[in-house]
Image (tube, rainbow, N blue to C red; front, top):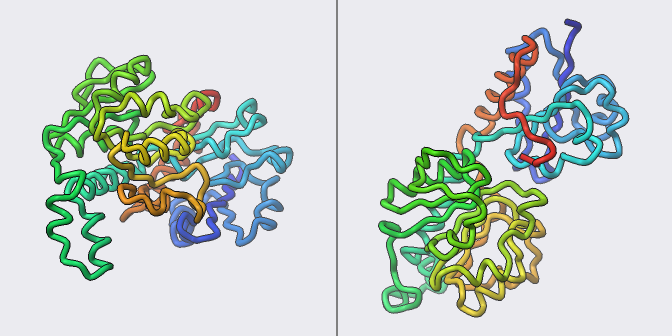
Length: 330
């Protein structure tokens, strides 16, 4: 096989989601027979695209797709791939893989973290701390009252590796775990039950906590709207660590304002960054985090190990893992 060229473009203007150079260097050392191109600018990336056999990251876009005549494989360092699946790529023979599972542990702990914050009213305590108030009465007598996760029901929309990690962590707290997914498995573990998507309404009514962990596709766009939120039990809370577009944000805001929902923890938004004028910023029973639930120790090591193992398979002509169904979107 002639020298293979991998074009890496995992560059985030804020630097949070940029692949550190030392990890690219480690991949190059592991695969001396492969040339890794690690450009500094988008212009350099565009110039290198015609020579790339493999794209690691997000270099491929509709405007430059015609240049990618040699590309046979694209690997996303994120689990979600909706942003890179434009029609020309979907219709092409290029294989797409993703980082499914690399973020699962961090996201599961994030979900449990915000759930515990609500249950123990830690967000209220933090607000009062900033006011220098010893707010014992506020915490004990305020609404909603202290609760506990033990014995509560967690409903998961989506039950891939992230959903499974959340379910496993929740069971450790004594929660009942229900999950809806397109293809339920006979063995529901680590959930107590797996249901088909036709039972979403039943899940909504049964859940004290609704966690969105599904990929964003045409089928899940605004999946949770006003009608679905109305089916949730009084006092329930929603946690979204997937994509903002899965939840109808105006409907969510109205459900929170009316008291139909007791609270929401949102790591994603319909528009990111969340606009300053959004009422979600100041709602007392809303916890907003800036799309960081997937960040955690060892993330880039796991991402690069996944890619490296797949690159070894690619070089050997073996089937790749974490292959995305381009038409389904995950």
